[in-house]
Length: 170
Image (cartoon, rainbow, N blue to C red; front, side):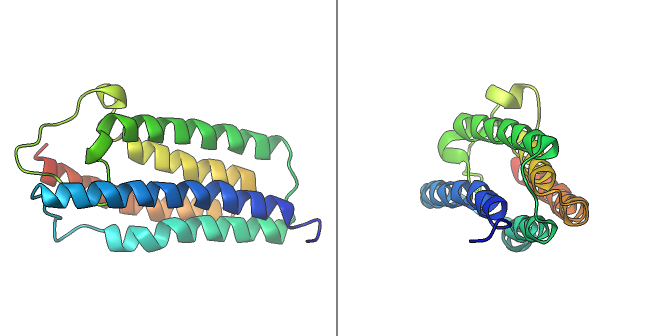
C-alpha cells in the first residue's frame, strides 16, 4: 500500500459496507412484501439506479486516488455531511421498517407512513442519498465526478419519485 491508497480504501469501506448491509435488509423486506402481494411498477428506474449509484461512488473514489487525497478540512466536512445523511437515511429506514426496500413495492391496503422524518419530508431517503453522494464528493475532493454523480443520480431520483408517488397514489 502506498501513501495514496489509505483514503480511497477508507472511502470504499464507508460507501460499500453500509450498502451491502442495506441490500441485505432490502432483500428480506422485499420477500416479505412480495408475499403480501406487493407488485413492482413496470416503469421503475431501479435497474439504472443499481448500476449508477455504486458507479457514482466508484468514480468519486477513483478521483480521490488520482488526486492523492489526504484528510483535511474538506474531507472532515464530507465526513460530517455523509454521517448526517446516513443518520437521516437510517431514521427513514427505521420508520418504514418492513416496508423499506430498494424497490418500489406497495402491498395492497397499505397506508402512507407519516411518522419519523416523513412528518417533515415526503422523501427523506432521497435527500439522504443526495447527502451521501455530496459527502463522498467532499471527502474524495471529487470536483469533477462529484457534481456529475449528483446530477446523474439526482435525475434518476426525480424519475423514481414520480414512480413512487404513482404507486403510493400521492
